[in-house]
Length: 446
Figure (spheres, rainbow, N blue to C red):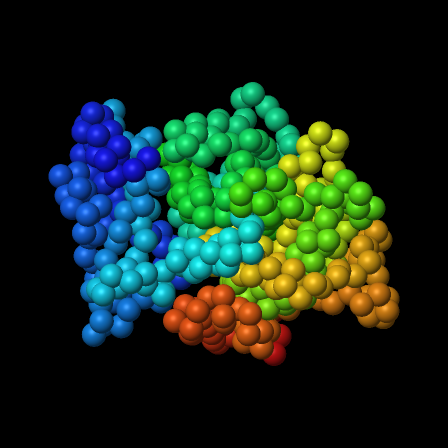
């Protein structure tokens, strides 16, 4: 849909307001709302806004920035109307006053990575699985409890969680997000709704939309949703497993499939892509598992991968290759299992793609796939098999990220510096904070 078609639809459907959306470097959705009569000027000239207070954007002395709406992202917000003014949202690209793409815009970071893939003849498709928890509001969030007692794939027609998920799916479909499946996850109060994979930019836009839609519909039910990786001690955390493949930019054919390959029917390009992500895995962690809390999910025993290896059916592996099905060659893909939903999808997909492309450029070969449960191995056995381990904390992940030039090059200096600064501050605040656990353990005994 182009700008003229959007303006026509806005007029015909009586849309009153347009939310112009973008994200900061941490992935938080930001919005500027305009009456629809100003939308045509927004398409022609952009909309000015003050970027000085946005995380990772401009300094106070250079705060003027420009939003340019992407008409393809125009969607009517399904929770408006019914007696209230009808609203639509359009995702925007951020530009400098000079009319150039702003280096601090996460969407632009992903577009740069996509352009690099396109120059090699590839398009990246991504299908993320964003898990989340639903909690009852209990006043103090530290005492919030999951609102159901279900387990993996549990179903009851009278289950409140089932009704909440159904309302979320209806809203997502109204936003043109193609939902493939929804179900209860392993942990109490944990859920998953999967939407169809698409090109990386489209999918990142959908992932951002997905998160605020889930939160909004949950609130309508008197609940709150969280994408915190590990909100409850002792049970599984929430991941964002990312299914990926590269397709030929011209023909759309899946480049990862090779009928003659005896390694999971993966082409040499696919194997090099896997090798690249394994090679850069420790540095990727700082972007795809970006919070202090992420590393409380990434611990052995709760299905979250920790060890740097790959396999087919082995879910303890960092990268899993879903089983090939005859007649579904286009679905051949790799699944990166350690990202979590606290990540900014624009930045996460950009560094994932860059790592895979680096493996292709260098012709890297992955190590032997691991069929054993790596969680059962000793450190000596892991060393013998050449299986590394992910960083154990955000601090360690940031150090790895800083040692890997690929991450800096992919994010760009502006985003890298702002991101590293924000995450270092997060670690310092966590490091100095005295937690309830420490008080309970030490106050009366020391």
